[in-house]
Image (tube, rainbow, N blue to C red; front, side, top):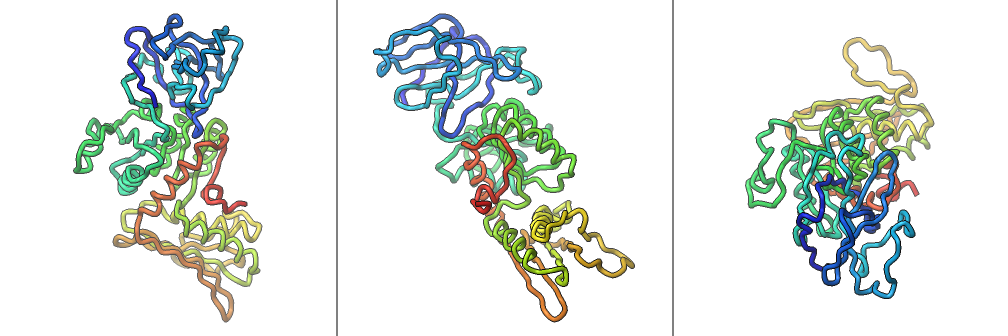
Length: 392
């Protein structure tokens, strides 16, 4: 990658929104000022393009050497031109938007300065932001991103007032500086991201979904406890960006879900279905997201809707179990990472499908796989079956 030099006063203040696909196709739009050539790099004004309700400009830095034979052409001869980031074209990976013309991302167009120093932001690796970085899953996700050669950590988000806010994440984790400062501002943090991995709370996730959709970043959601209304908000956001959501990101659990669906389809209602799950004593929701995912798989196998046949929260004199119901039992204790059994019980025989997780890192690795998988996908809602090719 060639050196990229600061532009100084030649570029006006602008706000940045990440807008980069995995294959690095970008739109080359207008720069501030007139065409200027420095050596073999040209910085120039191109035509305005309208993207929905946004009036956006991009700065293009073009390697002139391979293009000398093309000569100069008017910008409007290339409306909406897409150029692949390769040997011939070098371009900033940020959309640069005029102040006051961006709707939806609150305050994003507030006179942001872009630091265009040599090498900064110029990478082929997708930038990943982790929300809730101080939590158990957050720390696992940070470790997974740092261990990967396929992406880079560009942001860590925490709630306002958290002790980690303003600290370098490496220092906060008890190690050396990593050059990534923990922020409580999702707008500016998501602006740097090609993907956001989010294992937080339903309220936070719904709010993040609007912002990641505006930034066109892949939103990987492992948050559990989402209501139907929450999911409706996520569906709306998925019209504009890729959302990968799953109650569990591990390969084994997703295979278990597929097996559950197939077994439920093969057995009639003489077999009661009970999903038994166990987690650590810090877990705040029940049934777990994974248990509900398995329940949905069982219901799909039987051709019914889970909410119509769900049987959970048993306490006291509840009466006999209803034929065809799918039951849930939750255990909370100690440091159990996650255990799930799907029990098919009939008179005289039982079938049990089991998954036991002993290391939370399996969820982080699955979430990172989803974030990378989503880079070249069209906006929409996806799950780990899509990521793992289990829907084929």
